[in-house]
Amino acid sequence: MQRGVAYGVMAGALWGMVFLVPRVLPDFSPLLLSAGRYTMYGIVSLAAALPMARSLVKRLTREDLGALVKLALAGNLLYYLLLTAAVHLIGIAPASLIVGVLPVTVTLLGRRDHGAVPLARLAWPLAMVMAGIVCINIDVFTVADSTPVSVVTKLIGLACAVGALGCWTWFAVENARYLQRQTHFSGNEWSVLWGVVTGALGAALWLVIAVLPAGGPQGELADGRWHTFWMLNLGLAIGASWLGNGLWNAASKRLPLTLSGQMIVFETLFALLYAFIYDQRLPRPLELAAILLLVAGVCWSVRQHADDDSAGAAPAGGKLKKKPQVSTY
Image 1 (cartoon, rainbow, N blue to C red):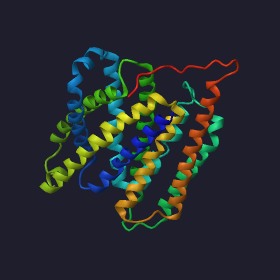
Image 2 (image 1 turned 135 degrees about the vertical axis):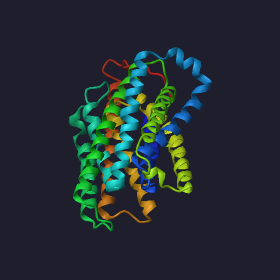
Image 3 (image 1 turned 30 degrees about the vertical axis):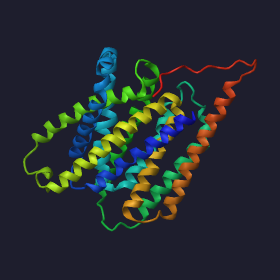
């Protein structure tokens, strides 16, 4: 469990970067950002897959391929399209606070899975997480913005963020369940296969961009901006996508859904941290309170799971309960 938690925190630190890149590249559309990121991710994954390609292809089933396509569409392409649109329209903090509800939504969906702690025991930790999100929400919508945004734009941005939340909630639950059902791929191998499929879908996005009317945003960008675009997307491909997804798969194999759902909160915390560094400012009082509440809620949840694990390890009679064995990362 401790290794699973550590993997989840490291994945959150890498995933937090995906909120910052759209802020650094506001002149690139969400479609371009998604196509660039996942094309690079596909190239990196293909390079990683080559040494074990024959073994992977032999074990790959039609069911695996269907699951990979669905997970890549929902958890990568559609999620990132909606997320980048939300960051462009309403900023990092509002987008991250809405996606930060993931610990609650994933926990609720995974409450009947094996190893899940009863929801009643998670009520107070979840309440602390929600209180932290409320603090961020109040801060975002009460602090004056130097660049006023219309109500319609805010509503569209909020809708995009909610859509991203829905995509990632479904992905997190389905990916964890599929990983725990199948035993013929390790977390690393599954991440590589997922990356290759995502890269193929990302390359297909360039065909969509090619048929768009000429003179769009991609036609007005300087060469220097394109260099920055590709370098940042290479960083996301290696860090957030390949390594981050591998760490998350490793965490998903070791943790019940009610706990792995809590780990996603670290993506929000690191996204906020990167935003503060980029803006060169310290968090405001409500932002600091939100961070403390989120961390406290997650730590409390981890303790609840640890207590439950210890209680189940030595039941009356002295016989240990064995957990289902799964392949390791």
